[in-house]
Length: 254
Image (cartoon, rainbow, N blue to C red; front, top):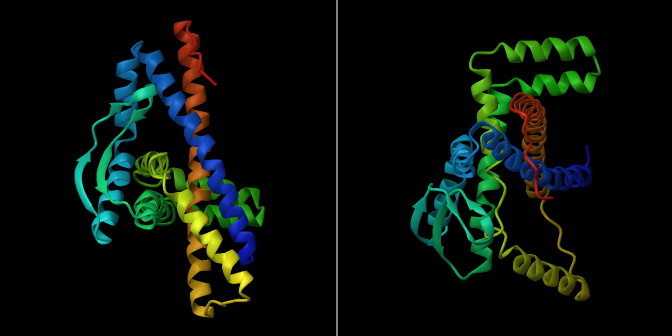
């Protein structure tokens, strides 16, 4: 796969992650509401389910801020309902006016979360072998690999961790605040370079490093999408059965 193809699919997969995350967040709380009948208990249920991911999200903010010399004071994993009804799962208070360092801190959960997903997916879930079987198109090999994966020790624990981490790794609105400024500066720099006739070329080794990073990131996003789709099916079935047994239905604001 060429570098441009990897970049294209990386962008597409990243854009797919947000609606999947939004659907999962909404319907996990819907299932909890059907079980308990209480919006408050549903909120706490949601917080507990995604606590491992929330911890890694906030820890990545804290670690990155300290590595680049940004002061931090508050580290919280306690849920809080903000204005407008938005649920904040945790928080790290940072003191930085520099949009570039703020952007690095904001993107940290995505990088740390992707590394964790990739390590679990390839190290514990045999997803590399499943991918190879899918590429080969051998239905028997695909089925055998899936069965072998599902009988692995603690497979459901690892699947749950991928689910919890991947749905907490996306940068929040506050994490993305400075992205527009950074992108604007980068765009202006590129336009200025083109206008001045500057056409710098990156060293081959550096290009390979970037391409390798993009490839690993794409693999992590692909694992995330696959696991999330599996859990979406599970959530749909659970919500349908609960609604049928209880004679109730959750109405969601679209």
